[in-house]
Length: 620
Image (cartoon, rainbow, N blue to C red):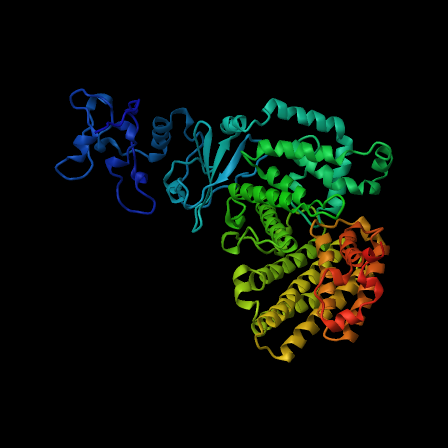
């Protein structure tokens, strides 16, 4: 049998323990086994206890005899107060690494701690319930008044001891040096060079102006910062600043100084993105909140030319973002944690924004969401979450309204477009209609109760309207899907159900096209999220879908006229609104190739085709 070996020190003779040594939740005295294992000496001398002898005691319980020469107290001597004893016990147990502040009971409300502290060189890793570290065990650890138990390069930090205990391991960044070296990543010294490169490229005064542009145009849709943690060109991490500068750069014409300074010497966006991405490769080993914020901005940023979605690369970024978010405990709700209110609300906003990004990317790219609501607690926003959000009241109201649409779109993805839903609903139009009508009623209530309108000039209001129409389109896609699969499988369905589905899709398309035609050209001065071009393209695609599904020659001609009108409208508007160019490209490709060369058409539709729909390639 192995013996437990330590370098134990004798406890001071004048230390005693009072009744406070008893457990606060149990009215029974602490037994000798509560003493640290250091009291077991690894010595083969006579009288030295061993694990063997302890386990083989006549009582059948773990016990041992403590030799008097090591200077330990008898139980009769332990009658002083435990407050004086506990720090000494911690010192023997942890040496100089034990709690340095006054210890506190395991129960009660902990004082507020700055969990996301940019001044520390550590990453807070959330302790999950099934990991190797047992969260409930933390309640029995010796902790200082801040809820911490420090070791050499690791500190255990508790922020909540309630029904959902929340603990973090504050891990020194130096622990990841070997992993970074094996991956061939830059050293910290080389990483510091990127800071010099960024400051040479974007001086502090220019950086401050770009940050203000970010706060004006992007922050209302992505309020990831707080008034207490506003980004600064002097103190914020390099990768975060580069991401902010890159996403704010398209709005430099709204700053009088930047318009002149950068008119003939514009900042290279590609260089800014490279600085951020390279630095993030280094930082992801020990992610912090600024790392998460930088990834959010990289995902929120639209593609440069609006014609390519960069889906694979964006999915890679999203996966990395979610991994970092799980590390930092952003899948939890921090409302009850012992952290400042501004940190709790900031964490909730960031958590929801990650959920929002995952939802819009899943919908716009046609892929399953990476997150599920069973394991992601913050999926909605409330008025209280606007505390310290650095945006005005009107913008926060629009953000709340957008959050409601995200919840509805999430329901659409789950109940109408998930793989399990597809297997059950793809050929059952009655069931699909039942679910769709409930969701459409929810959408109608949202639209009728919001104060926004298509003529509202508030940028976020326009984005919300686009989100509304796009969510409506995704409901109608499920209805039209049933129409196609029902016809192919020869399953019975009533004409009334089919007509109802087509009518709903036609009404949805009419409203969406009306929204597009009412867009003001000055909408180019607002921030369009990355999913916006794909949403406009979806409007075009459902328009083409209804065209090829026309039930009569007369309907086909009407649908063709709608396609012509929309094409002309997009040609004019896309010059000022690049976000519309992908939709225009989809229509132009039909005219270039020819409708009859792309789709299998029913005879009455083929007969209604005009020469322009037969394709330009035939004349070449």
